[in-house]
Image 1: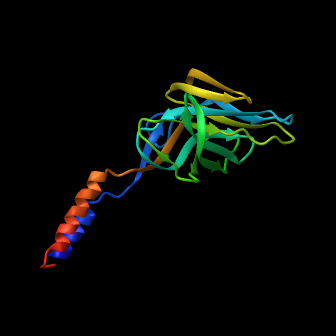
Image 2: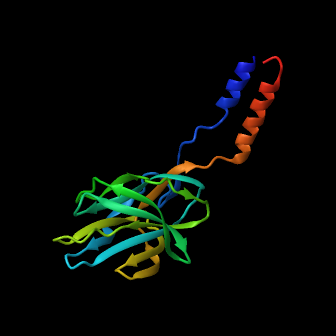
Image 3: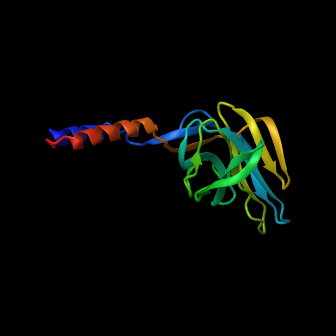
Length: 200
């Protein structure tokens, strides 16, 4: 009897699944428009351009991965997750590496490096980092969201410029939502009550 009650209580604890912290269309596979994009780039002369999209997290918890609509002249592309500091990118929170970018626009997924903790209702920035300068111009195209979404974009060229009411690029931030503390408290109390019974 005791064992069956304990197992029932444990079974009532939800399994933590991947959740959408933010998405330009609300899904894990955000739609995008081919032909319209923001571009991160570098030139042989050393000029590096990076672009960042501001977003508000809808959930609290840890980041697992990001999804973005990309193409480029190089296969390896780095994205950074930033905190917000008075409407601009603040402190780096996480790093993501895309290793299979091609010249064809497609949705790609990159895994979180540090599993940054996000807070619901808080603003953040996601940046497509400009490639390191080489012998040729390097480009990364980050395609506009479809349906269109307007928001705030920061372009570093190299001085940051914040642009409001812009069409933002397609992306999703996925992670594991933080469980409600009250749920674990209730399960814990239930287990304690069962274990304290002398008949167990």
